[in-house]
Length: 270
Image 1 (cartoon, rainbow, N blue to C red):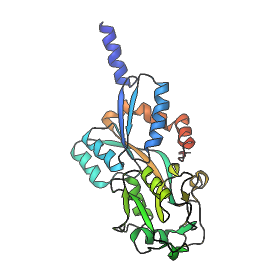
Image 2 (cartoon, rainbow, N blue to C red):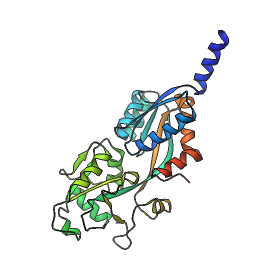
Image 3 (cartoon, rainbow, N blue to C red):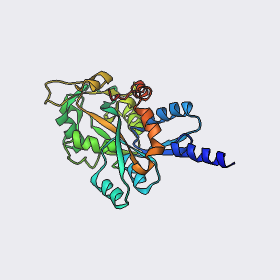
Image 4 (tube, rainbow, N blue to C red):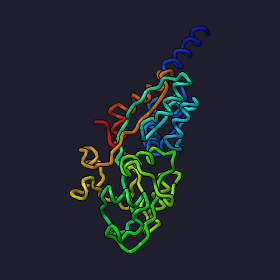
């Protein structure tokens, strides 16, 4: 009996039999769900629960110690770092994949390309009609993620040049809601991770050199870094939980895990 107890304790300690939670970024969500499914097939004693809500939600859960891993599509913020530090919780950051951010419009829209400056104008409210950027005389309806989203933060910093979104931009609770809204609204524009780009929306070519060259988002252009809106995707976890979470993190970083990254439309590390 004593030997069985020791073996059980050892199994729990080594992470070969455990349940863990991952929470956060909606961008990272579908990737992590696929990784978890594959991992649990190979490690049947393990149970992994994955939920979204946004990068900010995941990192808040890490601060509260209610998740084992926070999924994030942006880097941890200073105030989040300070909260973890104040709670005496050291953490680790791991880049698990990259993601190209696609700017999407309704397929009926004849505009097929925009400069970074035009995107800034649209989402800050300076450009209000598609005719101002070569389209039809039609009001622009801009969709964004909500403020807890890492995608919202990344787009603001790297596309809007840190300027504020216009007050009439419609904030959506999830990436899928943006795809659905853009597909159903003729004058719509939004932004989503490459893996979310579907046939019912049109991805635009983007220029970061004031219109000299326009590049379409794709696996190839993200890999060769010619597409300008590419970002890392992160896992954050407490160092005190490392023995529990590391087998899964290592699986995601392995050749098998990185093949899943590419198979579902994200950009692998190598």
